[in-house]
Image: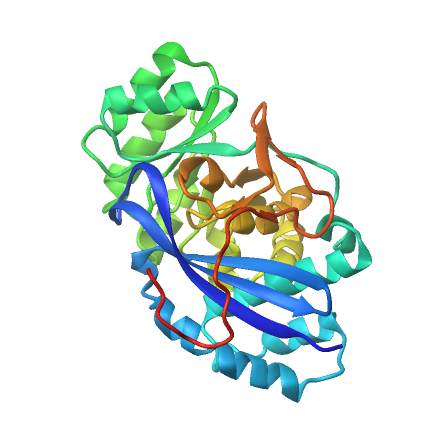
Amino acid sequence: MSILIEACGYELKFKYPFGIAHGTRTGTDALYIKAISGSNTGYGEAALPPYLGYDIRKLLLAIPLVNQFISGNKGIEIADLRSAFQLQFDLFPTPLIAAIDCALWDLEASIKSISVEKLIQADKNTPFCSYTLGFSSIEDQKTKLKEASDFRLFKFKLGSELDRERILEFKKENTYKFCIDANQAWDTIHFATKETTWLKEQGCIFIEQPFKTNNIEDLAKLYNVSELPIILDESIQNMESYLKVRDICDGINIKLVKCGGITPALELIKLAKRDGKIILVGCMSEGSCGAAAASCLSGFADYVDLDGPILTSNDPFKGINYQEGRIIKEKKIGTGCIISKDLIFENQLHDMNI
């Protein structure tokens, strides 16, 4: 089977400035991959927030080498090609492999006229999707909540001076569940223990990534005393990093851009579920293309955090809708993403307006 990979650089823009412990952004660079085989296409996305440290132009420059690699594996099945890419993390950056992997899953399912969910034999479970509330004033938060009236689960990004005030204000007018993501912002075990106790009293259902990834000592201490489940995000990039912290966490946040796509995510989910961990499927402020791919894993998840499409103002894809806090797809074939803007895909680098 002949396959050609094309790529496009794009800047996703947010409806509101997005503030977390890493800083405040108004948008995110995104890499889009198009996998072509005859008349069939598959799409993948890798959102690249600045703190990840990837240069999108360097990723685009790698596309000719990607196609050389595919030519060297000419004739193998798509599933085998995905596996071959998973052995090339020394050659290609993880986000590039992730976007290619998702595009190849989309392509294979499209060729077979089925959904990726059916291809991976995912359960039909549709867990609640959280709506993210980044750093903001109380008034701005109220505006965001009005736009998210159909959601039933909310995630507060913590690390600002208004953390408690924002949560208390939320509770005045809402009875919905909430969780928090510290994004590594908590500095000491004393502060973390105090905040965790207070959050438990307020009805929080879990806390995510309380400490920096290298602060294993305090993480272990908090895990031993916390009344709330601890889910790790930045601490877990792939299978290797999961094995280092599996005994001091209650769950994991799986993001396709971190681990390399749907293929390694399935293996990580399988092991984590066997360990009895909570499974959260998240994203990197992605649009509908990335969220559609990640949502294919929803059947294996306890929670999903895939609200990126609703937070962006210029999403070049569509297909993801939200109904009573759950993800509903318009398209039932492939990952479910539908291209809606004329993106300029190339298999070599030209001037990219990003």
